[in-house]
Length: 235
Image 1 (cartoon, rainbow, N blue to C red):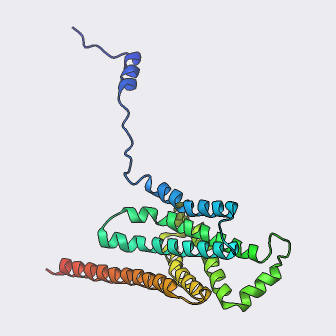
Image 2 (cartoon, one colour):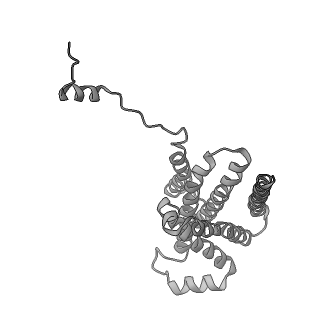
Image 3 (tube, rainbow, N blue to C red):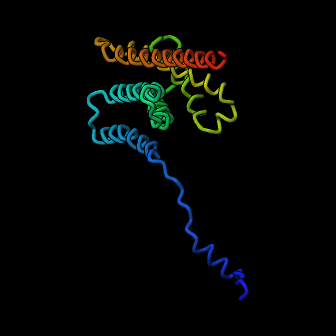
């Protein structure tokens, strides 16, 4: 009895019957989109409050405060991602860092737009010369505007293709600007508060602590690496 050779039709049927391997789905796959949706909720609330007249007697001032604080908080949360990963060993903080940073840029941009509205961009009295004069003469505005300008290249280069184009070392150096941006944001908030400086002080201390943790862990890893190299070299 000769061995049966499978016909092309039978081979195709076998291929069709073969189960298609399922693509492995990360348990953190929905974390980034969830962060984005959650981060947009405050903006929806502000729009609702503006629509219903619930922003109080000075809606522009309230929107400026809310968008500015939200931007600063989101920036600090994005800074916390790496120290949290280093301390706990969790990988998910790194997955939400970009979403937090982009949300921070969104609220910072809204903060600037509300400022421009306050300068009359909607009623026709807006003048670019007035804004430039305000930015140059008022340190409170100068610092805040500088922080927003520095956020622009960080937001534009927050995608994977940017790392390839810039190179990892150059991209990393550029994104270290975020510490300078947070410092400017804290100073901007400090100068914007008239009496109680507790909240901007807390943000400043938290940002300083996160920076210190990064330095400590970097130093620890360098010493550990040097120690490992020494042991390897020892006969």
